Image 1 (cartoon, rainbow, N blue to C red):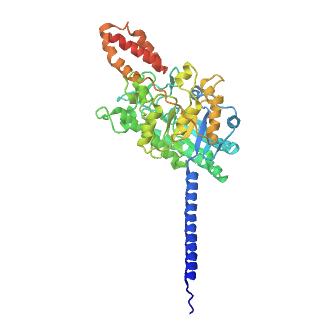
Image 2: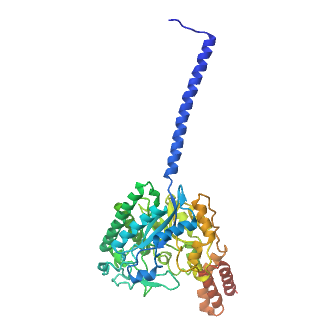
Image 3: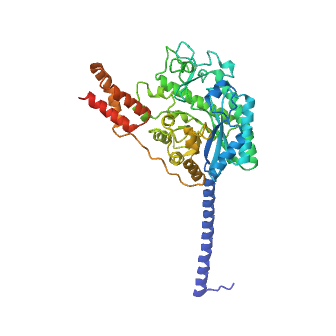
Length: 495
């Protein structure tokens, strides 16, 4: 064998070897780069779609009490969705999608009505390119189910089994009386939940198949499995309920829970979880079922009369109970002092998951009744979407006449601009927190602690007017006026 070897040949070989090594390296780098790009693409593809949705009250109101509780349904649902899309001018892009939510679907709606509503919702989503979702009333309106009207299924006001007179709804300036609060962990109530969840889940699964057939799975935004779930108060007496549910949980007058309020919160959380599991078991995809609670913030509570314990004031629904095993946590979001901060603290304790604003808009209901002035919609939405919200369900579109403050807030030009900005993929600014003066909370607590004893010695005349001004200002969230009234009271009693 002839061997060719020289310094020049050696250099040529080394050059060839180096080039070959480079080619292997480039190939390996290319494969790594492709893997990274594929991973990034999958990560983008797997990012949850975020939905800007609008609630339409459409649940074929089969009872008088439903008709009294909610705005009338649209005369033409399909046209209403088209008008929504066309007013905004875009249905979404990539991971941002416009949506509409139908409901509330309650026990008072017949099975046939529920089937038709869900089928119509999916058909409209396919026709319009606007995502559809559904909102369930979990326990308020149930008069159609006569079999539940028994002492085993209706809540009690005491350990003796005294039935509640009707549930109190504080949805307006005057409370509304509806049918009695159900005992949410009774066997018959849970059976009714299971049957209704199975019906909804199966119909939703059928609709999802239609979407999947045309590769538009993103047009299903999910099911809100409740409407500010809670154990409500008795209408006639204002008493807090839950004794039936506590009895079912193994407690009694002789064996009460160590903490009555926390025990009721746990029962509500279990009820939320039961709805979620039942819906998912029947065909609603996991990750598309949202809980829906409501609470006043602890900061707002700190400014109010704290004679009522916090959990009672919020009907036993602190933020923690929204986090059931198989649901996306959700709550009502209206502008309120400390509300989102308290929610973020709870999110942090649960690993900062995605969450939902299941009801709300950029106007406080108190201000809607007093002044009709809403907040900046972009700031409102930015404070939600920029902090992990995957669904924001806005109330107010098409509700009432043109002067309705909720409608004006939802349909104003500034609001439309904010919707377009979000759906176009642009970043939203956030509403700055506007806290009361730093000393106000301390001064209010001081008034609450010291004024009762001072009045016993000196009578109410010197502080009566300022106390009334303080109470009014706090209710209306006029913090500057509240601070002035509190300061005036303290100056009087400290003379």
